[in-house]
Image (cartoon, rainbow, N blue to C red):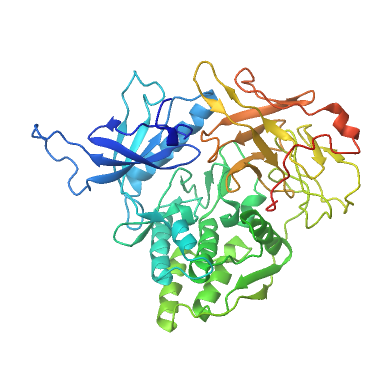
Amino acid sequence: MRGDEATSTWAVSVPVGYRVGRWEVTAGIATGSWGSVYAAVSRRDPHRSEPDDLPGVPEQVALKFLPTGTSTPRQLAHLADVARRELARHDRLQRTRLLRTHEVLVVDDPATPHLDGAVVLVMDRADCALSDQIRRHPGGPVPDGAGHLREVAEGMAAMHQAGWVHGDLKPSNVLVLADGTWCLADFGTAAELEGTHAYVPPAGAPEFMPPERRVSAATPDGQQVRPSGDVWAFGVIACWVLTGSAPFTGGTSWARAQAAAEYASSGGRLLLDPGLPAGWRALIVDCLDPRPGDRPSSDEVLRRIDEADRAGPRHRNGRRSAIAVGAVLCLVAGAVALPAILSSPDRRPGHDAVATGTISAPTATSASATASAPPRVTWNAAQLRVFDTGRCVARTESQRDAVTGHGWDRVWYCGNDPGSPLYAEPDAETMVGWMDTTTSWFVCYRHGARHGRGDDVWYYTQGDRVVSPHAARKAWGFMPADFLHASADPFPGVPRCPSRI
């Protein structure tokens, strides 16, 4: 095993005690799709008089490892892009309210191939993330949340003023430092503006993703984003921080993302605590305007936070009530969209939405079906079969690569409404991928707590299978032809999609 048991399946597995420069790894902190973060302490040789080339750097830091030893050329290219974004941000965005990066190292360790050449960012170490704070105060506001939200807005404004977009603003990417202040982190998807917009990888947390990204066509450069997308995410975060709840209905992250899409497309409801002061209520509503051009700028957000702070108390207890907010933006059905997927249970009685292969493509929402109806089969742009049976039937098989030693767990893919991303179980918060409807290819960013490793691979169809160009390294489940006309579920042992679908 390359690292400790607890981190052996992480994107980058690093053993406790491993040295990089003057830093020694002491524990794992967290892993993501394209990198892993470890706690580390300074271990300068006490017997050598070394100049302190990093004055002011704390003795305890966080090390973010971005690997280069990967299993596919496309994954290598994507990781190189992530490293480029992180390094560019390090060079150009050392600003207030953004997590500080003190130095950048490159691992030189031929004896450890999976770490040799990895880029290591030496960063400030946080006490926790905002997502942890929200969990510690379920159903209620985070202490001094309004003041800390200004710190988040300061970080967002600093990025926008420098010509950058964060692109993945969410509570887990807002860190709480040792002095109690909040700052923005995780700039692997951050991008420089090219005029009015930037391009980011097609990944993110849908609950905090602006509605325009759900219908934005993927391009070779990524998805087009604007600073207004960060402002939308700030509005969702502010609601969680000040009230302990989301501004959209739903008991799960995915259900809330669906409610946000419906709110944006045809007019819906925001759930705002009546105890919110008027200034904060109006700001959140404006940040969540379905029309990107009508949202306030980050500088305007800062000004209005100051006004709300002067106007009165930051939060009053009260029961939640729903307020209707008119939505003007109408998303045109059939426009170029993200991947796909069949209707959710609340729209199709008796059925859970499901995608086989690994995806389904954009289709019109079908009429309601009864629970006893036979499976409904459609074909998408990539000729991947889509089954509306209420069960996830696409899967990857566990297999270990004899060359790299990398392994893959079995993954069940669940589909949702047209224009939505796919998810892998059991990681309900991690996006799997999006369908590129302009070609017969599908890019799958497979990652998460269970599988650990990120995997950027293009898949295509071959007969009744979904096949990878690197099929010798990965085996994919068959989609039996007799399932096309089955009147009963041929896979009774397959787990149902979770309730969030």
